[in-house]
Length: 308
Length: 304
Image (cartoon, rainbow over all chains, first blue to last red; front, side, top):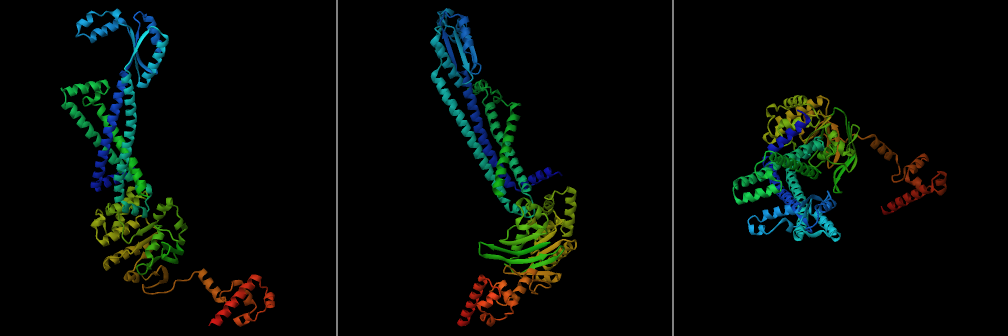
């Protein structure tokens, strides 16, 4: 048996022989990691949602009806900044009529009186994020002062402002929440593993007296921590993902499912609409690695604290 | 091999556990450290295994200055000793076999060697059929023998056992003693802390007796024989010096001058004049010392 496999063997025996303590440590790790995972997922989803709405927000520049297409395209090229703008689209008078007809398809009276000439050409601009959009609005307003062919600039100021505030709150909130949960997880797991080490303090003293090196004593405890974190991560992933897919499957065919599916498609989170072979292993691996790392760091800290 | 030189240990500043302990042990010796409870025997062992550090004095194990071993090297030092603790200290979460394996594991031994050594040691202490039991499943005597097996696993240079026969019935105690004799025959130095008279008397070997933190006897013989420990050269010299010093309280230099001038008693000192002192080449400081000495003497005489 190699030195490494001996350490693993010792760890395995320690876990097996201290069943209740191992069970308690895994239980605490699972709960802590599940709560952390839940809130981290919620924070990520919120961030994705805000990003989606940020990208959907647009500013529309309406031109005088007699503005030539060439002038509009020149302005389009002038305004285009690839670092800010994700999409800039020219909408001709004919395109505007098509959109109008589509929007008011159920109201033929409104359509019959409108022709392409009565609608203004426009540029629709989308930015990568809300800060980019605000910068675009500033640039366009400056252009309007010198360019008489720009008739009107339209954007939903309240929506943009609210999105900006929401985006900031969610960004800061996510950082604070995730950091807080990480610290809490670390300490809870550390205390639990500390109890475990404390229960072995007499043995640790004996090991020292008969000539064990500190690393010889520490390594099995650190591996034990990694094991508890790993199992905790695995169980935490299970108690989140299984109920999620159960709800998604159970709700199929309902209005809720339609709304959810639409939202998840919009957010590019289609893999959450039904059990996904590619996503599930990644989800588990992320939880296992995170749990094991947290277990190692927590037990390392606990071992240092309790072996002093 | 082992030297305790003026070793003292005090707790909380004023509780003296050991007071000026001096003795040495040669390679391959078998000796007992005896004495009543509270004599300081276990403290002495704790200092030897560097569980504690003496308040003053030196302990040398071969060329190792034990109290000053850096923490990093402490495991290596302890791996050279075999220790049986008074309270046994087997690892409760490991089986007897695992306890012995553990002592070999920390030395980085190969599996084959670990297995062979463990088998040999379990056979030596007669516990082959108990190898898979946990300490709490063993009797007191079995635990004691198990602890001896573990202490022997690293083939120690010095084997120390604190009350290895405590709480054992005479048969078990004799069995343990036989094992210790075997170990000693193999060349290992053996130090037994005990107050078991029968065991000590059975061995008829060196017995160091401690009382109230001091070594009061060091001799080859029985438990009850009390013979003052052999004096070191330094102590002998000091005594000789004191004996030769006629005028106690006076410095060695003044005594030497007086001795050379054949001034042998106090009456002769009292008759010394300034001229005599100058002739005897007394320094001013020495004259002052002698004057003080004479005054003290006369005051004492007057008081008496």
